[in-house]
Image: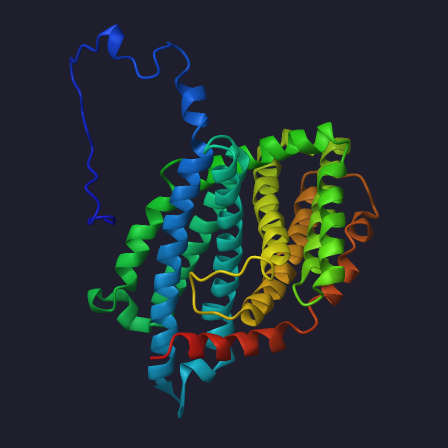
Length: 341
């Protein structure tokens, strides 16, 4: 099992009498509300665990890729290895970092309470991303990845719990979808359309950030949510949970592309230019994820619009994939430079 370095154990209380004056919070029946009041903070904290674990696993994979030679060249020079196991994870983790930092700044400004939905998005994106990075690091190291000596198997065992405690990933999907669904209804569909318009302004100032593609993701998400409303697709629990997943992808892409230039980070030795490249990569992935998966599951749930694919602007999203391989090539060079063997 994992998290052996943490002093965590099961606790059983049998036939224990707890006096009324020992009630946490002082008021009966308010426990859930009291817990939810700090979820924005506690889930953000668990998200940071996932982010750190994911990057540690990824660093080890990047360094290993420079040492392991196959067919006359190091693995770091082979796209089939780097673009699948290294670059995609770097983009996902940096998007999660941008969102975590954004939420943390808001919590500091607002007294450390609230932002339950944003805390759920941060936890979901960072812990799922960290778990994926650790899994891919094991694969990247081959047989060595499965041994204790190389540590990535330990990281995998440790990071796995972050997708479970403080709310499972499925609870996060439900929480995110439930809350953002209400925003969609209250705003009459304008919530993500307005956010996309703000990204248009970012793109006008910083065209290298990928904010235009993140805006495509937000507009596709708004379209899917409206179609869910019109056809009552959220009666299907699976559709509701998938909405939570797409919200997380779209919001992290939007935040990453909006902040990558204006809010540089010293937490990782990557240049702003490299992080801009990662933002473009991630925005493309997010737009395609939201639109293609959204179309698939809307059709699967029985949506009635024969022109939904066009409404999602899928041609523009596919066209936005241009330059992806070149950006991934540049990212590999930057990762190798940042984390030399």
